[in-house]
Length: 261
Image (tube, rainbow, N blue to C red):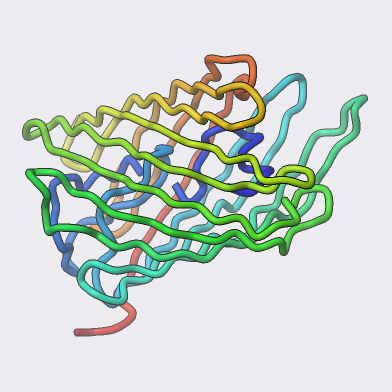
């Protein structure tokens, strides 16, 4: 993850409650399945020939500093039945001025690919995501390095309404003059409250080589206003001194069929 993303904690911008968990090899008429708003990404790819835009706005408070960022846009393009290309558009970060100053500006861009394994592995949906963040952002916000990351999101349907999911990941963010190898582990439970409405509770932890662990408790909900459109809201609380104090965010995602099969 870029350095700025790491400092925010575990808010994975490439990072979904849209848990079409247990769904294998999606087709174009499947309901939208997003990475946001959970830290763990969705374990399935977008349908072949579809383009999906996931967007949001986040307010974060950490050690007396309040920050705003958006539009949190992630673009996902299905290029095969189990493969998608990914683009994380640079966010704009705005820090409210404090006695310690402020560091505002655009963050770094990231390109990646997601490969769904399976169709299922012992009842689990599993995918592999590889991405590279590039130093295109403002001086005060960019990591100033080419930072790779690897994510392994998974999910398993427990019943008609309950789904377990999570993600294992490793990141190599540039911090200062060196990389800070960071492992990540998440686990969530999703509950379908109504056919278009899901809620989740999630634990996420970052474990960097340098700096203390960042533990986070995360809650959220997503509402499908149409088959290919989704609204979401989420908030999180830091559980360790190195984590953010708290954050709250909202989002809107949509998908359309760009290439007819």
